Image (tube, rainbow, N blue to C red; front, side, top):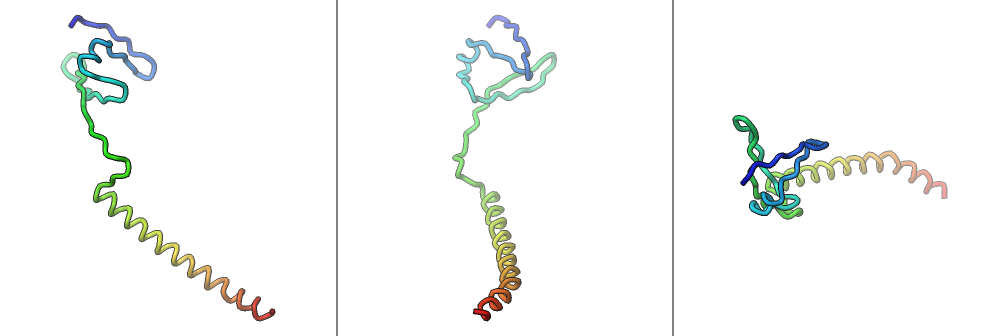
Length: 97
């Protein structure tokens, strides 16, 4: 392929020529790996398999479970504090009826 001159645009963007995109089967949203080589840069297509959004790794699942358990403990303690604070007031109000 003949050499092509690219201009670096705002936000350091470049546009790959259509012929190269077609040859490499690149489209919007695809990834390129960039590597600095002697005298320039090398761009290589990278195919990344996306996980379903609702899939968690084991580590993520365990952290989520720990966060939920911690949150439940905090809220249970807060509920207990509220009950201890307001129960005597409620009993007092009921006794006046």
